[in-house]
Length: 480
Image 1 (cartoon, rainbow, N blue to C red):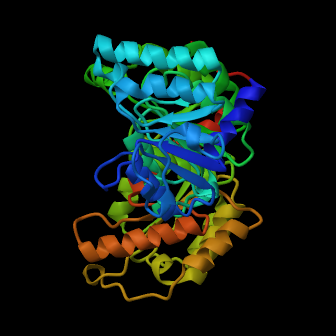
Image 2: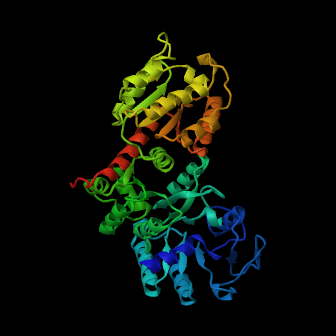
Image 3: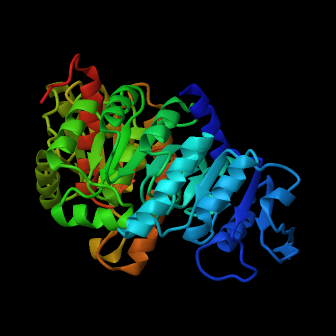
């Protein structure tokens, strides 16, 4: 296993790449587009385009075959027609190549006997020559640290999020989404049909990878169920694993077969998997990124009691209901904390308590930090959600001085810091509001404080965050 993990590093830190199937003209997804994106991303290693006639492609010398290269490349990316992939793969393995990414589709996912047999040939060659193969039918490896970013966010940002996915489109979407919020990626991999290397291989690798602190996993089905369970259970004790499971519904399960050719599995088994491994289940892309932000940026919570800092009596009621719906508590302050709040929160037009309805929190950073300091010292409070309004005419709200860095620094450096997040509600169709809100959210996240586009998303992200951390404090998880 150790040798295998060591070998996998060449997928993410290759010094040389050969691309088989590079056309001389641009157009669509393929070897040419990957070459273009590697160059755009600033890949520093040596790139060898393979083409039977061309002498040069995009300013790089082109070679008619792998035999003509001055070296055996660390990584070979294959974008050839499916029917000739096995032959090329075997010829390359005989020359000593060890790591392959097969972009080409047209294998078992077609549901045809021809496609199944082609994939069996790929698997057999992989086993015969002990080579590492990602795919077929996938986008392959992604690593901002080495500028190996031919898809997703280009050139991306180096960070601590590791991604393993059976879907190329979903992997690309997550890396782009994370990048838009200032969250970096250590390594990502789209494994497609996983004829040779599968989810468990890369989960084992990222579980030991020092650059990866949290793992995002998209999975449709698992042939090595027991191994997946064992790995997830062990790794989740030290690194959160956030899982988006595809194919839970009957319709989704049927679709899986035509996507990667994998069986989605029984719902009851997956429910048991999540209960017993501490892997965190999410239901969509938004849940995925929301939970990742909380688990990655926040310190462990001492409990599940939330302090809500909002504006408006109606909002406060709705926010408290949402916390209850998410399984979080909204506790009362201790008497001494409540007295401190009442000393400056006016009785008229405000509510001193939890939730806190006090408009000055929107206007004065000094007042908000004073309130946070009270909450951080109160043992009944374990988490804080701060609702922020974007100044606009409808609320008679004046423009305020930029407060993001000051507030973020106070929160992240407070000696009694408790998990604190912001909500920046910019939904509703106002394009100006959307632009301001998205920018504000990104700035908070870049400063190390999660921000969400709605209170509901913040509450449910914190619920998953709390459940994961509280599970780590239990001596034994319940068995089902």
